[in-house]
Every structure is written in C-alpha cells, then in structure tokens.
Amino acid sequence: MSAKDELFRTFPVIVTQTVLWGEMDSYQHVNNVAYFRYFENGRLEYVRRAGWFEIEKATGIGPILASTQARFRRAIKYPDTIHIGTRLLEMKDDRFTIEHKIVSEALDDIATTGEGLVVSFHYASGKKVALPDNLKEQIRALEATVNNTKS
Image (cartoon, rainbow, N blue to C red; front, side):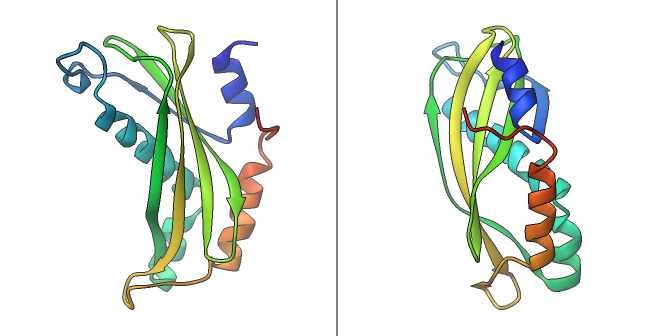
C-alpha cells in the first residue's frame, strides 16, 4: 500500500495543499519553518472538524498549542503536492496529543512526521481547563471515521 493510501485510510483529517516556491530556502528544499505551518493547517482543520470553534464561541474555552516537534525524513521541494494527516494519539483530562504525517506526491513517500500537544485553555481567565465533555465525544466520533490502527 502506498504511503498516500495508508494516510487516507488511517488519518481522519487530511489537508491537501501545493508547495509554494516561496517556502524553499537557499538549500533548494522547503525550509523547516514551513513544516510547522503545514502541521498548523492540519491541527486547525482537526479542531474545526471536531467542532471546537463552536464550543469556544459558547464557552470561551479553546485550543492552545503547548508543544510541537517534527522529524524530517525526506526533503520536500517545489513543485509538489502534499497531504497533511492529523489524528489523535492520546487524550487526557485537559489536553490531547495529535500526530502529524506529511506525504509528498513527488516523493511518493512520507516526508515528515510530528506531534503536537494541544491544551484546553480558557482565554478570558488565562488558565488551562478540562476539555469539554462534548468536545471529547466529537473527537472520538471523528477518530471513529477511519481505521485508526497506528502504523
């Protein structure tokens, strides 16, 4: 099974986008900063599909990124189309960890993997709080849309 097929089979959220010329650096590959923007695109689509933006409007409780990391496996270059997969690794009372995987069409392979720790944050008080129960349910439902066997 191709890396792209595996991604689409096991990740509930996939963002597909083209690589921009301006994302390249002087070494003729995508600069490492751009990968974190790719992860951000996946993360924001994940919380959108989980319905967190509606919950935030009603409660003032929203997501905040506590940490992120990446493992650069293969260099992405322009022109290319990438698929950014995002899925849940672990959920706790006030946070969850998501996994990112970026697949390059030009390479026909995984280019980058990473994780992000997302904390439930009440912006008006400036404090972390428990994840809303309805958000936890919506995340579980989102994850149930795929065969989420970790690879």
